[in-house]
Length: 566
Ligand SMILES: Cc1cc2nc3c(=O)[nH]c(=O)nc-3n(C[C@H](O)[C@H](O)[C@H](O)COP(=O)(O)O)c2cc1C
Image (cartoon, rainbow, N blue to C red):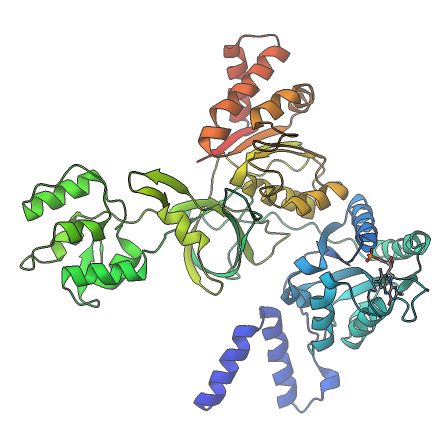
């Protein structure tokens, strides 16, 4: 047994570590107990499952290293390797111990320093103590012989990886101003080395653990909450990254249900108005719990339905106008009689309905995580502008918060067959499932092409995941993309205009067996976009709109036409 203080230290260490690091620690401690020395440590990355992904990382100031990394990623993909291209500043450092193959293109800046976007990675490698014995790597260093510390940052990174016992699959290449010939030779070395290795099995299609057993619930911990819009935007779209429990698997196209919590301060005020103890037990539907728990996580207290307001009026025998109102305001204006049992109030309230968000991450590109792309919903009321209850909860979550979710399989909205083309029509946050699908098709080496048509308000502030789309395009995983923005004069186009503008090619793709998916807000991406598709089909097959509608119906039956509208 450990003394409580030591146990606390152990828990703190466990909290900060990944599951790979736990495995390593367990082996290390067992080794210590047997009297082994540090030289006999077990490998850091005894990876539970080989994923076969090659990660290409770049640290750059003026884009040369990015060019090298992008070219390399393209070549790897052509060679059938599952490849992930990542800018160093976007790389999750904790992921390092789970990598199998890491290829780094990095320049030197200042006086022998790494570029600003790779500073965190550079420092992390210098501080890391955990061996990376399971990692294979290669570094290409970009620099200029006109500086005394030629290619120093790359040399340092290579040396650190060696110190951490990672295995070099090709010697470091040092590139001068004319970097291309040396970088090309290094790429050939890397490709040859990888080709000589046994081919890695493609990742098995993820299995969804929802299915017949009904809702699969789990708790995820928020790691990142980042506003995607730039200053000046009218939108507030957040990118959220949650860490998942290990056993959870999902498919692109799946959604998660999140039950928002009511504000703690409003709940406290309601409890006061009801004159009950926060921990007094009440029942609601089939469960019994404290007043505080029920009011925070279970019952709906904002924007009560007129039916609930009516029942309340009957209960307390008072005339109340037919209106929607928050429970707090209702209790404030028409007080709860103190002689009444609060249970009667719980009996007339409705439960909080979970909100569904389509997952924007991919199981193979973002292992162990679920990403959501959620907009804060703003609407006008008689009392002024208000924010949606569910979207406020989700977009304001703080990193570290544990959130209960359930997986929701959208049967009609599933990642296409890997050999078929995919046409993605997205408005705003409708981009979420397509980020998931393209990343998955990229990671699993799907041969079908991907084509994104995306519309939003403002090109400068509202182009979600633009750098990712750019990278995917450069490495051949996003075949083409067309965008339209309503407030941007040069590209003032709606989604339906984009569709009609490209009708010739859309028709060709459809005839070659492509899937066409629409995703986004119903008002903007629903009817207008479907009508554009119907017009296009009717024109191309010289038929009536009715025949065009039948064509779409047939596609839908085959699972090739699907809509995700909200
Ligand atoms: C301000 C500045 C400082 C630099 N310092 C170094 C250096 O210390 N050592 C080196 O080898 N190259 C140095 N370079 C050259 C760059 O590493 C080289 O131009 C490289 O191709 C840039 O690649 P990037 O576009 O990926 O950042 C420096 C360049 C600049 C502009």
